[in-house]
Length: 442
Picture 1 (tube, rainbow, N blue to C red):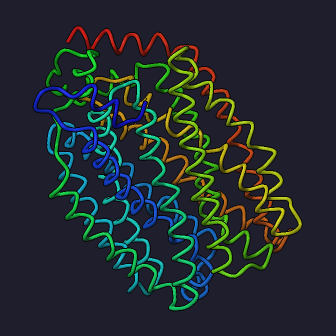
Picture 2: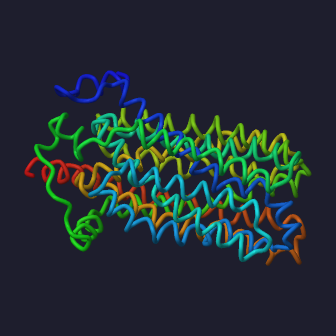
């Protein structure tokens, strides 16, 4: 059954059509594309930016990680709390305008401090993107199709990375790295207007009431009560822990994958952008869609599969990661990277869906923000910085090869996510049942 058919079957009198639900999902998907394109474009311009501004790999890791993630994570919770009681559409609109403006301003930076400040601005703006979007999508699509819908949204990560790599690499090599930031920044402004004037704000809990999961939606609880509720859900905390561990490796590879291919295999910006960009886009999208579909299909038989699937993928991709990092030629490396990246992203849909399904509708944006707070502080904040630090620390012994061993060391840590996801699967049916019972009682 398609998402549109499912939405039409659950449409009440005077409600939204299935086609419009898919349209909203498509618009928010494009917003997510810009979200990742604007933050990820740094990866493809690391080498010329580092040379012009005289930066070390540790400084680059700081810019890619904590300069962005600190404000992204700390601003996320208050913004999400506001989005849980105000217009989520307007929150996304304003956030998009903020982060694209700071991206464009990056074209004029002249030193590390200025670049650091623009990265902070991008982080603050992007904090207003995913939590309200997750909440809106959960109102447009019912629980049984939520993982698939959120997987479609999650593809924005890979299309955004692919666009940053392919177009960013071409623009940087032909027009300079500053032109990349100006182009991708200004392109987001028309999209913000599209969101503001074409996306409809639905009542909170809309799809749950239509599907008979909830009868009414209570008022938003105080922050302390919301945090207490969210932190008490065992499976959700284990899901967040597993995601954080896997993201430590994932974000590090996203930032340092392109410099790795340039330094170890001597590829140009354009060639790296095209080859890695296509893999990020095609394998990433295929992985996240497959994971969403498989978890929805298997999860109808046994809810444990919503987390068993992420558990298995956490370890199945490790041999391909080793092949990518240890290969002696670029062709073999890229051949190994494609299946690794496909497998490594199958957890996205079920992770997003369970984060939304385990909490009441009035806490969904808040739960998403807490998830992103922890995951991005550890994964996005620490991952690129740790790898950059190891690049510098190992350079005296291994020279240019140091990046190979730093990526291999941190990448292997991602496999330990298996433990957290598997433990989450054991308590997931009970926690989902408790969430449904609480929603029905309300």
